[in-house]
Each structure stands twice: as C-alpha cells, then as structure tokens.
Image (cartoon, rainbow, N blue to C red; front, side, top):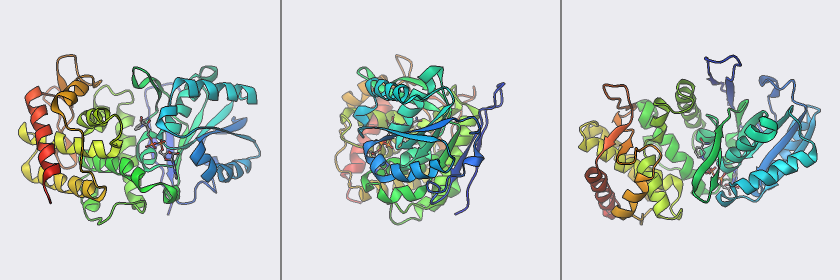
Length: 376
Ligand SMILES: NC(=O)c1ccc[n+]([C@@H]2O[C@H](COP(=O)([O-])OP(=O)(O)OC[C@H]3O[C@@H](n4cnc5c(N)ncnc54)[C@H](O)[C@@H]3O)[C@@H](O)[C@H]2O)c1
C-alpha cells in the first residue's frame, strides 16, 4: 500500500505544530524518518508495554538504529491499570538514569495506554520533549495516536491528569493488527464506525458491506478514520466545540463502561452508546428514521458478532454516571447527535452539544434493553 500523508495543521501559532500520519504495511521495519523533522534528535527512547516489547521491540530497535543514533527501550507492564502517575514517574526516572536529554525523541510503540502515557511523560519530562506515535492497536491507529490528548488515570477518575501535547508524527503499520487479539478489534472498530456516522456516508456504506469484522479490516478504513480525526482536531485542537462530535456514542458509552466496572469493553460500550444516542436523535426529531434504522442495523450486527448479551443497563446507575460526564453542566446532560448519516447536528447558535432530558435518556436505556433482548 502506498504511504498516505495527512497534515494536521495548527495555523495560529509561531511554531508550526503540523505533523504527518503515514500509513503503510511494513512501515515499522522500514521507517521513513526523513519525512519527520528529526534532524536535532540526539537519541531515541522507545516507550512500550510488556506485550508489545516482546512482539515488536527488537524490530523497531533495529529500524531506528539505521539512523545511527542511540536507541534505548523502556517498557512497563501492559494494561490500563498501569496507565497511572506512578508508571509515568517510573518511566521518567528511567529516562533520566539512561541520560535522556531535551533533544531526545520518545517513540511511543503500543496501544492507547502506551501512547497516552508516553505522550504525557514527553509533555512534562524536562518541561517537554518531542515524541512520535507508533500505534499498534486498531483503537490507537484510528483514534488515540492522533490529536495530542495525553494522560494518566487517577484514583478519582480516568485521564484526570493530562496535557495536550502533539506528537511530531504518527507512523501506522496495519500489519501489527495481525497479532492483536480479536476482542481488541472492536475497540477500534467502534471508532471507525463512529467516524463514518459523524462525517462520511460513503464510508458508512463500505463498512456496512463488510460481512465480518476482524483484524483484516481494510486499510482504507483506517486511512479514512485518520483523515476524519485529523480534520476535526485541526479545526478545534482543545475541544471548544467541533471536537466534541468525536464523543458521539461516548456519553452513554462511558456510563455503561463505568457501570460495568470496565467488564464490558470500551468498543462494545460505545456501540451500545451509539445505538442509544441515535435513538435519542430520532426522538428529538433531529435524525430521520431511515438513517436511524441503517445505523442501528449495522451496530447491532457488530454486537452480535462480538456476542454482547448483557450490558449493565440499570437506568439509575447510568444516570448517575452520565451526570459525572465531563461535557454536562451539573444539572443537564449534553450530547452530540447525528442529523443524518455522515453529518452532525448543530444548533442555531453553532453548538454541537444538545441538551437531553433525564426522561429521554432513561427511555433510551429501555430501548437498548429491547435491542439486546430481540432475537434478530
Ligand atoms: N488520547 C486519546 O485521544 C485517546 C482516545 C481514545 C482512547 N484513549 C485511551 O486509549 C487507551 C486504550 O487503548 P487500547 O485500546 O489500545 O488499549 P491498550 O493500549 O491497553 O492495548 C490493548 C492490549 O493489546 C496489547 N497490544 C497492543 N498492540 C498489540 C499488537 N499489535 N498485538 C498484540 N497485542 C497488542 C497491549 O499490550 C494490551 O494488552 C485507554 O487508556 C484510553 O483512555 C486515548
């Protein structure tokens, strides 16, 4: 496959923080480093987790060594539970011991946990150094590696310590998905479907024509999702308004994920969230029934392939979690909803965030229960 270049532009600043996203099978073995502004990078520090280190650590080390710079690998135990300040501290002290300086380049090799943690460490180590993203899960390739949100979880919530720190580039090797467990695929697939619903009808049709959803997801869908995320982030880096459309399905989805105590995966929760939120759009007269039905059919087909049967759908618990969602003012729920397949609703004041009553929210959970109980 040819290399695809996407420019993420942040025009309003003195320093140009644009970067490219390069997508090619095998890019991990043959890094086009000349495409990135790395002239001043004195050394590379690969941050990764224990699983990815074993699978791709040596390969990446060899490829980076071609640049004749020093390459070090620092890994931490895999898992969301390790995306925490203590790990960031441990990684930073390791960097210091190994002599990483202000001109060292961090390379985040792994899924969203590695990317978020490595980005966070890069943003604070010696008051901020450069980093590259080399995402190896579908979720990280189509979502978390792009846009510069970094962070760690805390005892008072997910991603509660974090920064905006854009990488200097993103290199995506879809071949790494061949080793990714199938259960991880749905996390990225949910974001790909979300991108099509919020921005690209034709992409949605292509996804609908797939008959199975596994690691053989067409590369062109990864490219399309990256383009959509890059375009949205370029227009609204710090989520003043437009970037919130990327949260479609996530208000209800996060509540379900939290209510399940993270036993239901992010992807499955977001797919349920998209079904519920598009149903809310239908009730509010924002979304046409035909578009709602099409969305719902695809989302339910994906749920069946990943055997989702129970979903922790207690209305009161979910309402409690949704009120804690960061987009809502203390007394109201706000969501971004599609107006049709491929476009999001924007109100007369230009806001994408729509108030939703407690009654409609709770009715959407009843709708989800019916969906899961139905045999089709
Ligand atoms: N920064 C953002 O904008 C953003 C957006 C969405 C999600 N996130 C964050 O992303 C995180 C979730 O990321 P994730 O779903 O990638 O999970 P993850 O990073 O935990 O990876 C999932 C599992 O897959 C393993 N793995 C990674 N690549 C592999 C490969 N190629 N082959 C085999 N195994 C592999 C990992 O070791 C891990 O066990 C969450 O912490 C979430 O908050 C961030």
